[in-house]
Every structure is written in C-alpha cells, then in structure tokens.
Length: 484
Image (cartoon, rainbow, N blue to C red; front, side, top):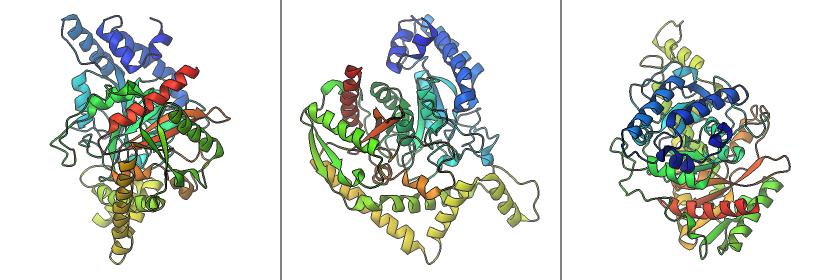
C-alpha cells in the first residue's frame, strides 16, 4: 500500500489491516514517522519524537502477531500524547522551562492503558504552558501552526494534539481539557475532540492545572475513531479518587442508530452577540440537518451559563495557584542559578521558570484565595458552579443533547490576540460550562468559513452518556460524507 493511502486510513481501518497482517506495524510506523518529519518544520506539533522507541515497539507487536498471539484492536496503531501526560523514561515538559529536561519515573494511567493495547508512541505534543492558553502560543519552546493555514493558530491548549491529527502526523492523539482545551483546537483544526465526563478517565499522571476541571480525552479524524479510543482509555483507576467505578460501554455499538426521536436542545444565549456570522450560520444549519434526520429541536434559555466564564477563570486560576505551588526550585523543576537566600530562590526560580500567562493565572488565583477576598470571589464562583450544573442537568432532563458552537470564531492569525488576554479568554465562552458541570462534550467539524477554515459544533450531554454524543455526531458526520 502506498504512503498516501496509509496516511489516509482511519484508526478503525488501520486496526483491520494490521490485524489481518496486510500491513505490518513497522511499515505503518515508518510511514508516519517519515511524514511527521516532513511536516514538522511547518507545523511544529511535536516537542519530542520517539523514533527509535516507536520502531522497536512496532517490531515487538509484529513479532507477537507472527507468533500467533491475539492482540487488542489498537495494537500497532501509531499515536502521540500531549506533553502534560507522564511517560516513564520520556521527556514530559508541559511546554514549560520549569520542567525542561524532566523525565518522569512513572506512566500516566491513560498511557498504561494504551501500552496494554499495543499502541505505538511516536512522541510528545506541544501545548500552551501547563495547559494555560487557547492558541498554543504560550508554549515556552515554539508555537504550533494550524495545518489548514500555517499563518493561523491551531487553538489550545491541546493545539499540538489537534494539529498532529489534522496534518496526518498521527492517526490519533490524547489531549487534556480544563475549559475547552480539546474541543477548541479540534474545532480550529477540523478534527473530532471529546471531553469525557469528569471521572470517566483517570487523571493519574496528568500534570494538574485545575484538578476539579481537568479531563483527558481523544482527538481523531472521525467520530468512530474517537469512540474506539475513548473506550480504550476510560475506566476505574484506584490511584485517582475522582475516577468512577462504572462499566465502560462499547461506544461504537450505538453509532448507527441515528437520531430519530432524539431531542436536541439549542442554547439561545450561545447564538447571540460576539458570535461570527459564518459560525452562527454553520451551527444553525447543522441543527437543521439533525432535524431533517428526525431529531426534534428545542430552544433553551439558561441564565446561569452567562456567568460561566468568570466563574471558570476564578476557579481554575485558584486551583492552578495551589497546584503550581509545588514548583519552587527546591524539590524538582527549574532552579535559578543565582539567589541570596531561600526566599530569593523561590522568587527567582518561579520568575524565570514560568511564562507570563502562567504567572498571570497564579496571581489571579492567589488573589481570589487570599484573606478578605475568598468569600467574594472563590466561594461565589463555587456557588455559581452549582447553579450552572443544576441548570444544565435540568435542561438535559428535557433533551438528549445540547447543541452550540465550540468557539465564537474560526482560527485567528498567530500573534493576533496574544497581547489581549481578555479577548483570548472570551474564546472559551461556549466550552467552559461543560467543565464546570463535569459533563461530556464533543466537538466535530460542521462546515468551513469563507477562508476555508474549519467550523466546529459542540454537543453537550448527560453525565456518563458519551454514547449518545457519539451517536448524534456520527449521524451528522455521515451527512457530510454523503454530500461529498
């Protein structure tokens, strides 16, 4: 099979070809590694490429198959991980000078699960530093570029993950989502991204940004692949106290059931001021498409979600302030070379090791938690969080999924918003409610704007009901294939 054909295969198709031994894992890995190296100068999705380890892992899979061993579905499929997921013996930097050169002594739970599946790790992916950002321009090493238009951002913070999948450097990647960090780059790059229900996937080995909001999920080229990968990484882990003990369903089982009779809520507040006309039109057309497939549309008006963005930035920054306090230049992480005493060591190490956006969030969080302001900011944000969760849960009693845009705009140009943090933060307005409520949300492409840039739509669902999101997303996705 030719290189172009192999690069065009989905995860599901690769799995079949590898299982039948029509393709070898070494052959597939070699094709993706060569393509990756050709694309990287332009895209910059990777921070670390594990070429030799990947080839060795692929050869081991081929040997096991040749010996007649029955292997899991993802055995031999190449993939990559966002660089805030710990990998034993492989650099994990969170795209920060603070962790430059850090090699973890253990693996993240999701990487353990993927190793058990026999996947082949091609490398670690670029991101906004400590997952704080929406454009991937906050990486301490280099920005990642959008494969659809290299003059534009890929989104963030999982920009490297989305760009690598969109550029066909890997068939799938994992990212993390604290306020939209899987879904927004998926939208900008034209791929599929899932933020699972909080507790569905273990966070063990994920370098924490905001522990009550973070969740790990897959980025893929289509909905079926996404369902396959989520099934491989989900499940109980006793090392993560927030990871629930629920059976993991076969997420592909209901993909082809269609949407006949399902109720799709359309959130009125998310189609108002600030939404680009091209994005608004595309998502409204997507709603009509679902209606044409037999779904019922229901207009929703939820007042509490208007306060989701400020509540999110108070809560996430407060948790970041606490989580990142461990990086002090003493136990691990970057240590300043010149300092006078222990206090100066802390100040110098953190000032030199953290980038400007991380410092900004730490300052916001520390202020929100400080004496005299805790009740006014952090406590109030927690109360707003409860209201948002209740509103969304009540709305989902009357509808099966909630449809909205992912981002107010399509991908903007590199440097366009980097000097205006508030404008950057406003880009999360449609994605943060899912994290605040701990609910699953799926981003998938629904159209393109006049510049040929992808537009994503978001489907938000009930807790632990990712299957319905995949079912609706798959039904919509098939209409696009029919139009082509």
